[in-house]
Length: 95
Image (cartoon, rainbow, N blue to C red):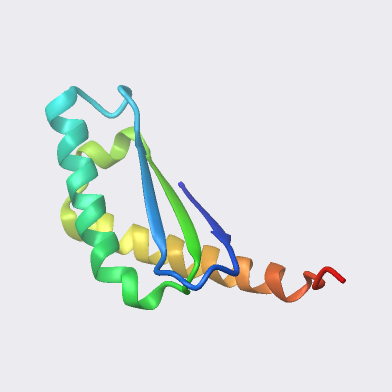
């Protein structure tokens, strides 16, 4: 599950991860978090400046391969970023 919020700040995108105890024990949760962190580091050049991205790992991520996680994160980022871009074009500048 992915949430993307665009800001007007001129900075690199930021990522946050939510990996609950439902995913598994501490070793499993840390493994999932490290994999997600590496995947997001790869995807960073493709994410818009100023974006804040929060990824919530579901319990199925504990048994997913790295390639499966990467495919899912990439798909979610592409889909969410498109929605966020569309929503940002509707925003009006404050006077």
